[in-house]
Image (cartoon, rainbow, N blue to C red):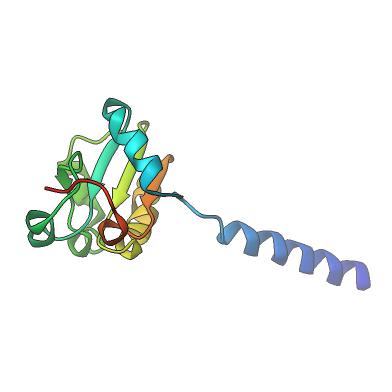
Length: 128
């Protein structure tokens, strides 16, 4: 009986750890600057609203997919010329929406996803 109980606990522990796996990698400003310098190797997505984007944005992030629309309709991704096999760099205002968006992109088949930790609020580089 103890062995069965231990086996059940082990299975529960493994499945819990699997469920907690992050679907993205946080990056800082320096890492983003390196990625922007090799912009052809990455896809840069701003998941803020268009109003937020036009007020201020990071050069290189010219694809805007509003997170509030995306969370209700994942198929909006199909409207953009995105390649699921190419790394994706996501940013928002503070890093929260982009974390949620990373999960959506992962569910849609994107596997290499980077999140700008702290979003544009934490960005100390150039903006437009």
